[in-house]
Amino acid sequence: MYQVRKTCLLCVVHVGRTAVKEARVIPYEARLRRVVHYIHDNPAGDLSLDALADVAAMSRFHWHRVFVAMTGETCAQAVRRIRAHKAAHWLVHTDWPVSVIALRSGHRNVQSFARSFRAHFGVTPAAFRTAGVSGDFQLFRMGQNDMVEYEIRNRDSVRLAALPHRGAYQDIGRAFQEIAAIFTARGLWAQAGPMVGVYHSDPSSVPEAELRSHAGVQVDAAFGMPDVLEEVILPGGPHAVMLYVGPYAGLPAAWDALYGNALPASERLPAEHASFEVYLNDPTQVAPEALRTEICVPLVSRPKNGDE
Image 1 (tube, one colour):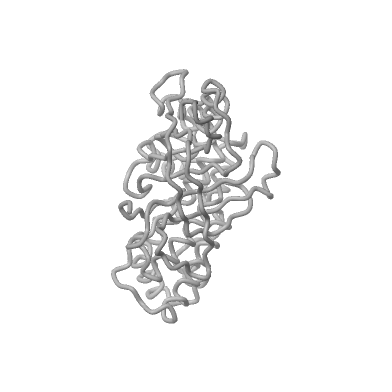
Image 2 (cartoon, one colour):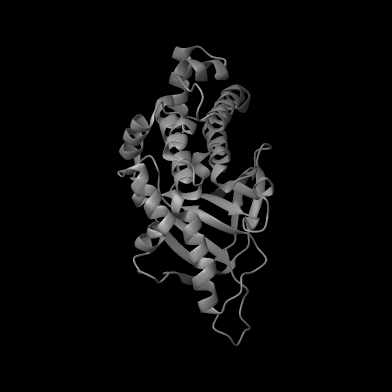
């Protein structure tokens, strides 16, 4: 198995110290999942410790200890991280004024937003928007100027324990954090590999509200699938694999580069299987510009006398 990963598109949960009986952990699991939903759905709302403790239906003191023990970060750290991710996406993928994004991401004014954003990403919101809109994230992180670096790789079949997500792909972090809560509460991280996002729909042709995806954790054949999770199998075979290094807000541009430039140049055809992302490091442990994500597109196999 791979080294246990505690990462996703905006979530991280540390390995539980001990396994506990399911009957005892489910109430904590349900509380954590409820709070995760609330944070993602209300980035501009009251996300104070008191408010989140009310959502969890626990005392302020006890909820904070539970949250830190189960996730490895404080409530305040989780809120700042999720708000920063949403703001980064809005900066690159909308034309909203920075002042609007500041309010939507829970900041009192542009000045406080700029300070918080720069502390997380190392650049101002304006500089981040310029780099993302121009494609500098994708081009600079690939290190190839106007070329896209990728490889054709044969991958083994992969089994995932997953939760479905419907809607905007940038909001899949909510499902990742839920699945992380389940793995933590049930002491399953010792059986886990990296986290994987599976994207079933074409965002250029499917309405955003109807996009289908799965947030998953790689597991082996012996893993006993909890009834709250779904099994997803990623077929093996040839894949176009591109390593993207940089903030998650730049991933759509990297996908466009792979589909728009690399695949046509390779003369290889995508297979009728879902494309996916494999998250190789932890967004709470490295700077956004150092995040490493493998973008994987299944390909149609060549004839036996071909190159594959």
